[in-house]
Structures are given as C-alpha cells and as structure tokens.
Length: 320
Image (cartoon, rainbow, N blue to C red; front, side, top):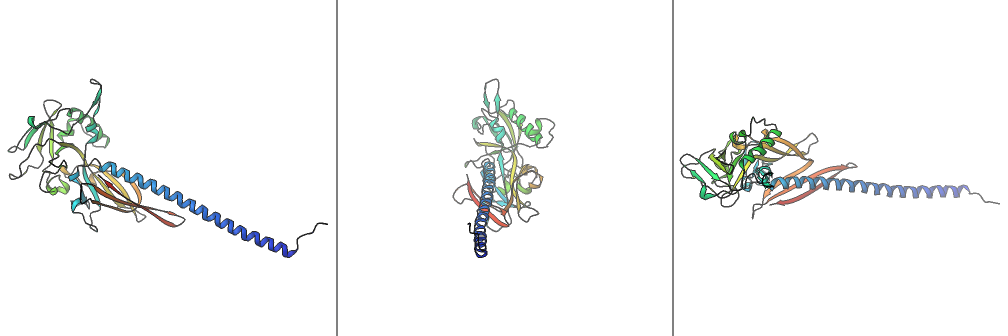
C-alpha cells in the first residue's frame, strides 16, 4: 500500500521549494541586472569611443597655432587656458583637406592635388608697400580648388553664384605656416586670424593668377610698418573655422556639438556656423594644451541609466 504525505511533510516540502525558488530567482535577477549593466557599459564605451574618434579626426587637420578656447563671445589661446575658467568651447582653423587631396585627373591618369602646401619662394614675391603679392606653387591646381570648394560650400547652403566666389568672397584664404609650421607668424594670436572681431594679420585673400599654379595674395588686415610680411615656403589653404561646443539640454546634462562653416576673418563666429551632433548625455568636456608639445588633451565623460543607476564613463585622449 502506497504511503501518502503527511501534512507536516507537505508543509516542509512547500517551504523548502519556496526558499529554493527565492534563491534561484534572486540569483537570476542579479544575473539579468549584471547583463543589463554590461550592455549599458558596452553601449557607453562604443558611444564614447565614437565621439573621441570624431574629435581626434577633426583636430588632426587643425592649424596648430590657431587653436583657442572661447565662451562664444571672447577667447584666449589654448596655451593660456586655465582650469575653472569660463572658456568651454574649443575652436581652431582647419586646413581645406578636401581641396588639398584633389581629384582624379583623366588626362594624366593620376590624382591631382588641389594645393600642394609648398610655394617656390624664388618665383614668389610680396610688396610690403601695397600689401599684395603672388606665389607660385608647383604641383597645385587652384582652378581645381575652386571647383571642389564651390561644390562643398553650396552643399553647406552658401549659394555661391559661381566658382569665382570661392576666392573672390574670401570663402577660402591662405595662411603661411611660418618657421614652426604652425601657422603663427605674428606676435600674438589675438591679431592673427580674426577671432571675435580682432585683426586678421596672418590671413591672405586670394585671386587666381595667370595659370593654375599661381595665386595673387593680399593681406586682409595689413601689418604695421614694424612687422613686415614674409613669403614662407609652406602654406595652408583654409575654408572654415571649426568648433566643439558643449550645449546644455533639457535633461540637465550636455550635447556635444561640432560647428563648422564659419569664418572669423569675415567677422563670423560660432553662432554663424553649421552644426552636427557628436554625443549626447555628456557630463564633462575638458581640453588643454600639452605643456611640452603642440598636442591637445581631451577628456570626455558621458552617462546613462540602468535600472535607475547612473552609469558614468570617462576617457582621456592625447591628439597630436
């Protein structure tokens, strides 16, 4: 005859089963929460890496001595930026790399650079009395530069009437690199590039010469008599200033925005540029110049929530 469970045995069985269930489901819940945390951390890490790579790729095309920290109305050179100041925006002049890379030359079956970055000093000249001159840059094609930048500028919404506007309306200008290859050939950065309605003594307007390798140049802001101009072997063409700006959002943190297509030498500033989003949920964006080199350090922190827990992730990167 089969023996049945007693009431006590049934109670014990139910109790033990309940306890085991609590342990099992508690462990399962912790495993699931750990999984969610891991997913959030991986997502944050991917977003942070993507943002840092975008910043690095943009800054690698900077003219090193043009970099400033600003608040949107005032600025200081990045070398003088101090922790805790109000200059939270990073700005610089970037080389016109699309035009520099050029395009395919069907006649010679090769890539033809738009501008080489080198001029023949022996064939170039500059008159300090008229603040005008001419440079000859072998292996350049400035007609191609106008073609490339005409298409780019119109895609930005500039509505140029012809490619002659690229140089004629000072959308693209020239900066000599100077002896340090950094772009700074005046005594102070404040007088060099037109930042926030200051002088543009290192900026030269352009006009095509008699052939595709020649440019006529003229200073936008002529130098004083005691600071003469020079023709340097190295030069850059510049189409735009660029900026990275933390903008507060409705959630109380920041969106990190890349600003482009504005020209300080034409009295334009950050608020005049086009904008594209780099990262959301930014808790911290810091930058500073390395004391021993031209490198810039970037520190970026972003955050997210997983099961009401605020997760923060920060990374620091040196950009040469």
